Length: 451
Ligand SMILES: Nc1ncnc2c1ncn2[C@@H]1O[C@H](COP(=O)(O)OP(=O)(O)OP(=O)(O)O)[C@@H](O)[C@H]1O
Image (cartoon, rainbow, N blue to C red; front, side, top):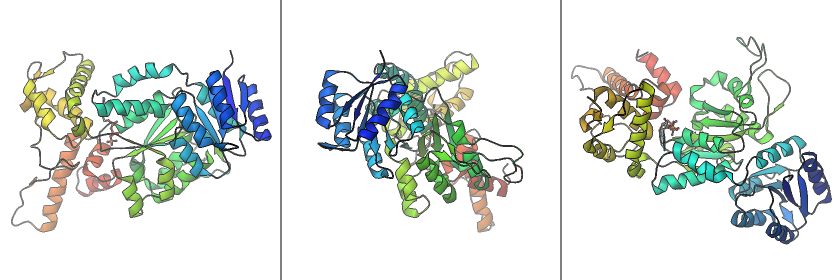
């Protein structure tokens, strides 16, 4: 049987265009001219997809989005909005619409939307639930809730802004949203926005034409093209230079990009997920992040809680990490003594799950036999503060005869070395722990002769 679509609209032109396009894709269409008629049809037969106009004779499309959320949460519903009415589109996405299309309808956009919607078959969530439980571990209420939200967001095309401290699992969450959704057979492209030098950022995102600048020896595709049909994950999005923020906003709005040195626009169909460990709303207040872009990225915010708020999951996570490490080295799984587990549960983990991974990997090198003791963990003495900052208490004893500047440099060097050691010289992770950009860290490494 062909997939069934319900189209709710009272404009004959739109009805015709939609019916023709969908029929061309072997989809059977049933039309309704009002919310009441749509609800009657929904109670009588099952549908695979629904389109609704925003303005209907007996109410607005949002009403229908909400009632379908309540009665048929598995049914993808797309809203048709007037050209340029982004506010309404965003509200619809927040209310649970799968996606939106603006008038005048573009056939390409319509087809992509329909294809994505049809990939979400109603019996997928159960399978998904097991899959996400195996990857995003945790049995605390917080983690169950998070997995529920991830599964729901995977069924939508809405941009999601993932907030949370460093190392909490934001990228893992983004990957899951992609893998459980309709775009999973296309690429998931993660990009660390803070790690791209300013002068290259535009060409990294949009690609360039041969000869566009010195060194552009051949045409090159950008990240948007790599992610076409899939998902672009903008990690550390707060670090994006302002000039690039304007261009990114345009690309998202137009669903098109122009390579550096190119004259033609290229259509792209990309779902945008973003994250940062910074407070993006504060960045907007401080003027370092554009409000309009924030509004477009943050259609839905998903918070990943810090590890210290889900201590009951620490043991489960630790055992899983040790199992993985044993698998990598083909050795017997090392166990934690009860004291070691207690020590882990009492430590605030400012670096969250990533710090737990690093702690256990380091402990393995100290552990004797197949047991990790509390001492092997070498956890820093917890400071009273549980904030996501490092303890910098007396890293380097000041020399009386030292001038202030070289003393500060020594302190800086010691803190940076500590962060680098704790992140196994992963500069991106170290920069995050230090609360500075990748670029700033690179500069400091050079200045302090640490490279
Ligand atoms: N709930 C979890 N279950 C299993 N592994 C997890 C979980 N949360 C995080 N991890 C692991 O912890 C590490 C850090 O996670 P991830 O890179 O997703 O964090 P992040 O919040 O994106 O960090 P950053 O802010 O530094 O970019 C990864 O190896 C990830 O697989």
